[in-house]
Image 1 (tube, helix red, strand yellow):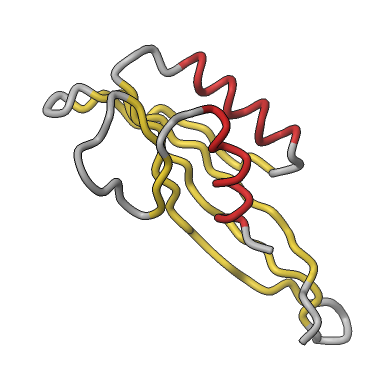
Image 2 (cartoon, helix red, strand yellow; image 1 turned 120 degrees about the vertical axis):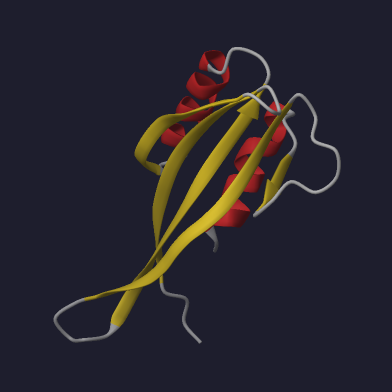
Amino acid sequence: MSLLKDLHSLLEPIGIPIETGIFSGKPPNEYIVITPMSDRLDFFADNQAHSVIEEARLSLFTKKNYQPIKNQLTKILLKADITITDRQYIGFEDDTKYHHYAIDVMKEYEMEES
């Protein structure tokens, strides 16, 4: 299980191009870049890792009003039991004419047996 894989699967049906890390090629009028932020182990009293907590940032870039897409993304993420830790408008990029909106997310996964 992987947060990146889950996010791609959840968001692909909305039809906005998604890439991880950086958008390659000529960007369309609307796209999402997923940036992994952390991948840590969660320990309990027995000092054994029982779960992995993964965090990522969804950066939405759009030349349109970002509000409807922000709301759609929020509903999809919450319905899938992905925790939203922060949402913020980063700003309007004068040189590219994109609005940049970020949604930070996290999800806990049980450790896979090896």
